[in-house]
Amino acid sequence: MAPELQTLDVRIVAISKDTPEEAALHKERDSLQHITLLADPQLEVIRQYGVEHHKAFGFDTRNTLTLGGIPLGLVPSFKVMAIPTSLIVDETGEVRWIDQSEDYRLRSNNDRVLGAARDVF
Amino acid sequence: MIWALSLAAFLIVLNTWVAYMARVPSGRVPARPWGSVALQISGIALGLAALAVWMSQATSLSTSIAVWAMNPMAIVFGAFFLWLLTQRKTPVGDLRVEVGDTLLPFAATTSEGTLFHTREFEGQRVLLKFFRGGW
Image 1 (cartoon, each protein chain N blue to C red):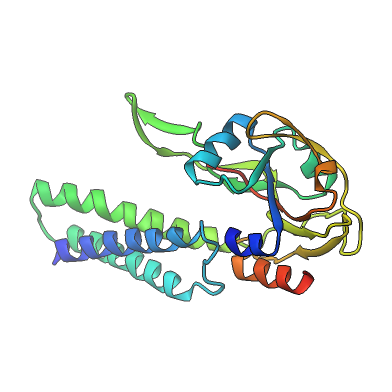
Image 2 (cartoon, rainbow over the protein chains, first blue to last red):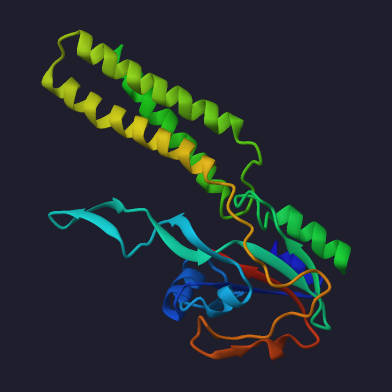
């Protein structure tokens, strides 16, 4: 999706509850050099925008089940994190599109975002 | 037969997970994952069938170990997959902006450790994504 958005001159900025260090690892692991990753570990921006999910089910690589020192897998837990939400903002700072799919798996689906970006710009 | 049931259960559940998760990074998970649901239910059913067969006949220790290694995992992970799908309708939340509003200004730290402010967006087109974070 990034190359297509680049042709529309759209900058991609992503923000999550990760710390800057976790965001850096994520950026390297998933080759996200074309994206600006922002860290919001205190959820200040997430709360400012009203996208806090209090009971999100997720995994944390720091929470590993071990047996005698042997890692057996990640232990899932309910955590506070951002509700996946995408906004397209134009050059004047106006919000032009918001992805509010109820199904979190479909939010920010590439086709949806690209379609919206083409419509807006 | 017990080996066939156990292997089928384990491989169906495992491969369904792998195939589904492989689509997550590219944002192309199916809107209606009925195929994955059907496969997971099949895997769970096969796992239960394998355990039922094990209980109905004498088996060697090695077979018993294999049966109890593969089938509970198939059943648990298959059920977990199905349960996760029931959680897909997350709340939309109390989003504080609407289309037509001006973006709420904020500051944050980048992954490089530098300070960021939305002033940088002036004159730029931006896709701003709130996401759950890396794992």
